[in-house]
Amino acid sequence: MIILLNAHSPDKGSSLRSKDLFYMSAQVACGMSHLAQHNIVYRKLAARNIEVGEDNICKIADVGLNKLSRESQPDTTAPGQFPDKWKAPEAYRKNRFTSQSDVWSFGILLMEIITKGDEPYLGYNDVGLLQEKIKNGHRMDRPESCPAALYDIMLQCWDLVPQARPSFDDVYKELKNLYTEPETSWLLPPNPPSFTEELQQRIGADEQHFPPLPPSLNEED
Image 1 (tube, helix red, strand yellow):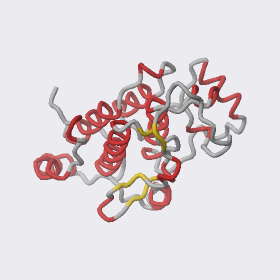
Image 2 (cartoon, rainbow, N blue to C red):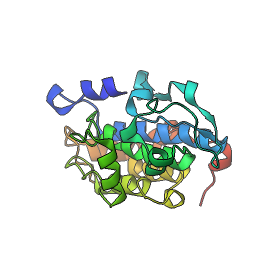
Image 3 (cartoon, rainbow, N blue to C red):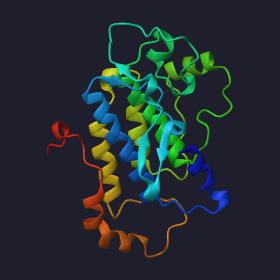
Image 4 (tube, one colour):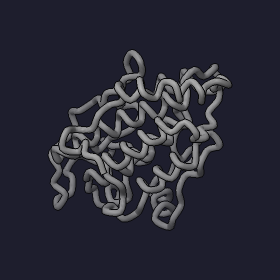
């Protein structure tokens, strides 16, 4: 994914529309819902571990480090195998990885997607200092290209209390709402002038192709 995002960065003539980015994000959330449903913790969610195929179909890759969740036990994997800037605070401090820590990493992934491949926390090389700032409330700023509603999802993912973070199926539903809401101000150039009108006409067709949640999670509120 990181190669695709960089290839479509604004200075390279972006062709990825806001709709595409929301769709890709929702696919990842859907896949992570499936893993969480089976008590599998991914632990290394980042753009570089998402494969993007034809029609921007996304797959969670590099599954060799997946494992069943054992939330009461610290992870015994050697330090350094997981990207520190993507780690939830509890994963960094206590080496504990859970579905909730995956949700934190998903918030970082959303920032990578909306900035089309920018490194998170750019300029922070001392991860220990960064984690201390995060503990004291520091979060990445909202880019100009990022809709407020999407940034709000990120902030929910970055709650210091793991249990207060949304589930992946909740995140999926919020992203789906953004994708199908024609009056949402997405702000990401370049959108043709008729984009909103075009989306209104295509919502019905797009809904048929939107990735469904695993069966036990796909229940109406």
